[in-house]
Amino acid sequence: MQSIDTNNEIPKGIDSTSKELSFEDNLQLLIKALGSENNINSTTHCMTRLRFKLVDESLVNQDEIKKIKGVKGVVLQQGQTQVIIGVEVEKWYNAISNTSMNTSSPGVDTIEKGKLFQGVMRIVAGIFGPVVPAIAGAGMLMGLLSGLIATNVISESSDTVYFFRSISVAVFFFLPMLVSFSAAKVFKVNEYIALAVSSAMLAPKLIEKAAQLKDVGAVPELTVLGVVPIELLNYGGAIVPAILAIWVLSKVTPLVDKLVPSSAKPVFTPLLAFTVTSTITLSFVGPAGIWLSNGAGWVVGSLLEISPTLTGFVFGLTRPITIVFGIHHSMTPISLNNFALYGKDLLMPIMCLGNLAIAGATMAVWHKQRKYVSKEESSITLGSGVTAILGITEPALFGVLTKYTKALMTASLAAGVFGAISVTIDTHLNSYILSSVFSLPAYLSGGTQNFIQAILGVCGVFVLSYILTLLFVKLDDK
Image (cartoon, rainbow, N blue to C red; front, side):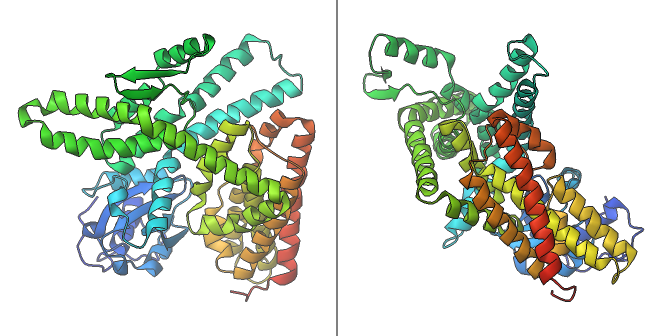
């Protein structure tokens, strides 16, 4: 890649509106529009967005970013500049990683005073964004197995089911390790020491010891060094304890590093960081994390008991908006916690309904555009609607619905209505999957009736969103 000037002007000889630019030229334009390499403090990405932490956000040229080929939109939220790319986001991220700028995730030290919520949401997105593909793949495998068993295509007692179920369940049991590795990047600590700490949380010997103590009627607890109580809990699938453990590691490591002489750092810094963090985690932080997880589950469960219909409506109504602002990953730990506590989740189906509502509104806009805009523009809208059906909603949201705010409102309303219906009739999932029509077979794990409800839900929300958009949105409603 050619060098980049430090001012905020478009590189000489490059026209951002040209369709003949190479990928490298478009990448240069993006970095320029962000205020140059020197203005980029750190970079990370989720499934569809490049997330930049900038030194000075006022240097961002949003209009120029939106003109760049391959960019679907830009959002300034949570103290980040989020550039919407879509399915090719990893290609862009890897290209940026080859430049001299820092591509590590912004840590907790970047949370500004008075912006705690934004900082927490940024941390959640930074941790769970990279993890989602792995857990979605394993969850989809579990869902497909359930569908094949329910339709008698394969026997539940077969070796094939035993094998594939075992490897998919393993991903969720060892989820603390995936989360810890991702959290290490966010909290800026050694990823492999973080894995070692999460491995200690899942130590087979400790799980075995807990079972032995329970069998003889004793309290599953050890006393280390004569004074430190270790409550033997099963941390398989536990998310909050893993995140807290790596946060503790981020505090312990620099403290230990200060105390250890330079010549001894290679050996004693990792030794003490691992030992101290693991002990603190298993004695106090881990149990506190389990308590917090159970508390969060109790809050969600209480809301569902008080009014499942209202809860579903609110979650559905806000789903498209959370995607726009890039905080939709905040739902991931809630759903994963529900799977761990109850074996099912009522909120993930609403995510799928939200995506289909976005698709329905986008297709309605396309229907209206065919007579009034160029064929090229309407084709882009059509493609955005199709990708939304497949689970990638950013092109539809930022390329279409944010231009027609009433269409965004009709999509949100449709998602709210069917979200309320979904929760009321107990449409649920038993494992984490991507919110796409291709994921519908996973609903068979909850029974045939659950599967039928899911199909009727996605069809109904698409149609309602489509009709509402046709009725209330005009092409000049921007």
